[in-house]
Length: 572
Image (cartoon, rainbow, N blue to C red; front, side, top):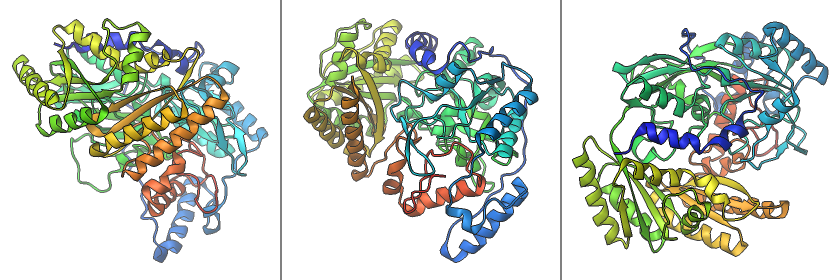
């Protein structure tokens, strides 16, 4: 069977690049020890935005909120559509002095040049342009200062300093975001690096949940549970290096989504959050379900740090079950996808099912890390799950019959635990193996998601478009839920512009097929232009009104997600 401990060890060995890119020597590493619980249970203040009939009441409420939270009426009805007013460079200098006085440690407050570079740059996102409040395109500016909090109280101090000096606040956690979610504002700001808040606080094995800080990674959590002999795991599995705070903030998922769903599916039971006012709230209690009021936990899932900074989370765990892996090859993507739909509708024990196109299979062979030599055909990787060996064998038998009916050939079921590990590692090494297709290249990784029945059309039309443009690429899909990824390779700025346009057309194609601009990577700055088309003006304006209510000064991760007005172009 497929060993969880072996899988995590192999996956960690293949992710050195992720970690090196996200963190430098100057970023502090802390031991994974248990911490004393720090939380609050102050209820969330909510408002009901946004109807022409009650717009006057909303404006009055916003003024009242800003009076109570910030001391002055910074947000009035006239201010609803004006640009944020940030502090001056002198204000920022004074803020840094105050932060140093508050924390009295070079380990917590850093203006080191390399620290600033690492926190504002990623090899894996290619959105170097931010639109400033004056609508001028500027290169992405570095952060002004990096602060490493160790507690909720530390975050409160940082937030209050930022409010005092009108300084943007940008949360940073694992550094694996692909859509520019932790890029600085054009004026700079405070980058709040949560990597020091990486402790498990409580494990409730009988309740299948766990309380932790936001800087701990999902892989680390699963390794600790395994080491302690606790037969539970956290099933959301995005990119290696991803941490709980970032996963919640982007609404992540991963290969396990076909079985366990996404971040929005009750895996985050509650969160302790520091609001832009400096107030600390806890979104709900630890009970498995609750019908008490608004679901304020979900308000922060996918908000990408624009509404608050998460400092503690309760996550739900699932039982570890035996698994194994199989692979099968198809003449084309259409028949592979049709086979998956048939498999899912049979209700068999599928934990993951991944579509890998012929170019990806070729890249595995070129990369040279695999123990296998694969046919260079469109293929499916299955991970089967069940309580017993007999149940997994039954699932494999049913799946083999179905895929053969749809033209699948070369069906291979892992015979040993090592073989299962090797097969799945080949799939998870997509980022690195894909780059082997074009020497000296970089990769733009992006995702969209459509109804499963629309996926063959999306993949076919996208691959035709990429071939016409002469781009080298690989296609991957969490095909069980219609999530489609591409890695587009380029070597220079000219090719980068071609890739950028190809990504735009892929997103437009997905939206026309009733899909979304992002299935799991988040919006950041890379996908925000598509929100009006995907969600509609009313929905986006509702999101913007919530943002303005909670963050009237526009300090929390400005310019991300839904923060450009379609009519005025105002960035807030």
